[in-house]
Amino acid sequence: MLPVLPPSSDQRLQQIAQARQAVLQDGKSPSGTLAEDWIERSWRRCLDSGQRPDQHITFDLISAEAALRAKEANEVLVQAARPVLEKLGAAIASTRYFAILTNAQGVVVDVNGAIDRQDRRASLITRIGVDLSEASVGTTAIGAALSELQPVWLHRGEHFFNANASYSCAGAPLFGPDGQCAGMLDLTGVDVVERPELKHLVVQSARSIENALTQSRPHELMIRLNWSSHSLGEESDGLICLDPDGWVTGANPVARQMVPSLAANSSSPAHCSELFAMPFEMLFDAANSNPMSYAQAIDVPLWSGLRLQALPLRCGNGPVRSSKESRAPDLPLKDVETALIRKAVSDAKGNVMKAARTLGISRATVYRRLAGGKTK
Image (cartoon, rainbow, N blue to C red; front, side):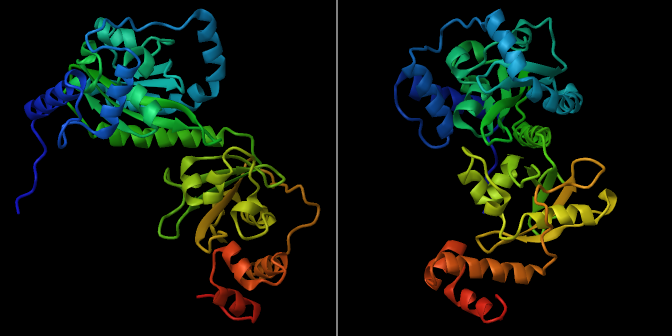
């Protein structure tokens, strides 16, 4: 069977035009692959709000008072993103795309790249304080990424307003250390060749910004996490920041995917003991036992029974301090797990099935560990 080739540029524009006809004029759903579901949802939100494709767009700036509040509220975001924006600007300079950073409301807070200020279309959307939300300028990568909370690629007529048909853009939402959307990163070009691969670039860059935001949180200990099949120290690591009491002060989206209890506690503080089936002081001890340059990963169990490798790192040059006066005993991990199983059985008043369900392991595993055997 011959491979299915992607549509040519002319075919893509024709498909977009057919999708616009179906949704925006005929009120129907586009057939086949003419438009992705999220694009149709955005178009319909625009229609439902009373917008029409042929309307004039003014690209309004927010008020001076609102701009001052936005600047103060997003100072940490801008500082964390600036090094990434500078690298992005250099990487895409020859493509005539440029980078835009917005807050969670779609207001531009920073830009970078080869912006042609003589082109009004580029100049209008790269002003600090311009509102590029879906409610203001219709379907764009910025508005769609903030509404759908997923990375997007948008080309020409896939924008809602006819006046935006010269733009092509990739966008990705940014999530802060508290798990909430903090803004979005956008790569836009005017009258440029379609480059959907920029969606991958914007996602990677967004991850770098999210990691910088997480590391900016006050913390005594930072833990880098990954599965045993991956090396630690890369952008793909989960990051968790802890205070001296073992409370989580911040975590990146990757960590929230790896450790489900982090996502479950996104609206309230989470303690390290809720994340890992081991005394949290052991992480502080591991960070203190090795110099920074020789830090080694340790094996950490999740309450689900899965295991991650963790690299606990000190915030400064001195030893990290747990608020506990007594150090956790240097027990083998197997003994720690057995002690935790015994505690779960005790909390369940001897009900082994209930304890096993709480720990996410089998009843047979509980019996084996209580009898001194090994888990499988």
